[in-house]
Length: 406
Image (cartoon, rainbow, N blue to C red; front, side, top):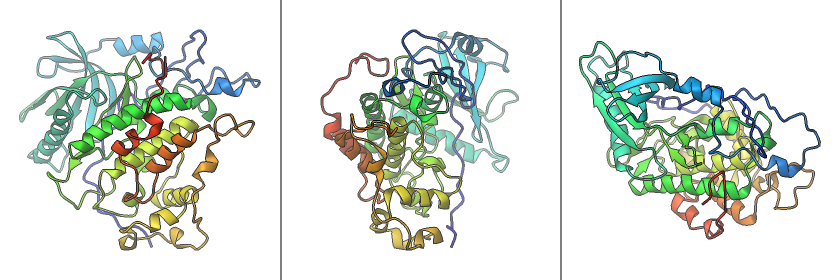
């Protein structure tokens, strides 16, 4: 039986810098970065030791000079928005509109401008009003948090012949986390981050998500493409266009939400009463990806994704969820041949024991956090606040982690 869904109201905008190639740049004593198309410049050394693979290019490493010059080139992209923000280059786009790197003519500051597009079925612009107000409200609520992108300005125009009808101006941060990971090529090993680095990155993401949840906000579209990395390796959540609170819009919520590869099981099973736990599931997927150098779950459909999740995490957890029996269960999960228990621990070696297995290493404490975030049962899934209180995050400052001396 197929899963019956309520149609999604909108899809989130594509992330900043998506599909923009990042050219390789040689740097001393650091593994060379690769472009987004996956051509590795260091793959000819077959005798490389495992330790070399565990040290990817720091997130805060400078971008190749040719890429930076191309990004900085001023080109006329229409009139300045509101006579103030001159668009320099397009850095993203999607169903919501386009994102530009722009210059504020008043301050000289380089900013990011998200130009929202009115849909054809919205002649009066009421839906655009709601989209703009929702994202601005979420960004304003999170203003001042170091790990959430900062809003600077926004505007709405009813009668315009040139320029956008609605726009949001934010700080310009840098590459997305996805683009940063892709700089290391297609192979998993060069993309892996050491456990200490992953702890530092996850602390930042969990801190930002905890703040959103304290405010009653669900992000609903967390993925590496919606995480920005600045020149010092600091991470910032962005694209809050899908963020919602139960107060402003009580259930039922839109379904589907979130990118398929980071979508929580309860959403794929058709739930419209999900909560903020869908965000922590996505963080668990990102944590596994940083450690392993590749996505833990990959599929092209929800049913295939559920089967792959069950193959790794087993069925015992999801069937213990109180909402499971009310869902439309795919036939593939109803088979008695499905794995019952989790084998997640088998995918990560204990530190110093990987040997020639090629498995990424993860300590028992780190695994407890990963397992807690990747609980199929949302009622037992670890919250962002609980994760940050775990002993894995207590103490243990790492000097120079990810290119940042903390």
